[in-house]
Image 1 (tube, helix red, strand yellow):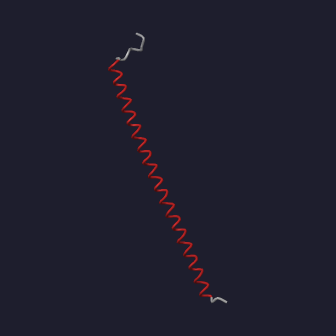
Image 2 (image 1 turned 90 degrees about the vertical axis):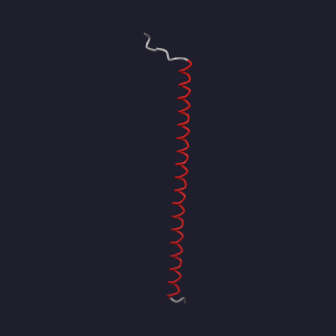
Image 3 (image 1 turned 180 degrees about the horizontal axis):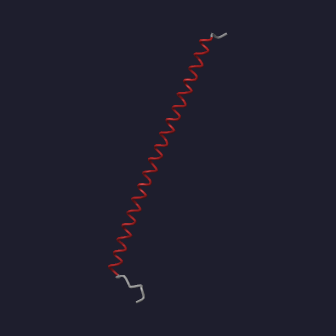
Length: 77
C-alpha cells in the first residue's frame, strides 16, 4: 500500500500540471485574438486608404470633365 504522503504528493503534482496547462492555453488563446485583431485593423486601414485614393481620383476625373464640358443648366429655363 502507498503511504498517504506519496499519494498526496502525486495529486498535488497532477493538479499543478493541469493548472499550468490551462493557463498556457488561455494565454495562447488571448495572444491569438490580439494578433487577429491587429490584422483586422490593418486590413481596415488599407481599405480606408484605398477608398480615399478612389475618392480623390473620382474628384480629379470630375474636375477634368468639368473643364472639358462646362455644366449645363438643367432647370429648363
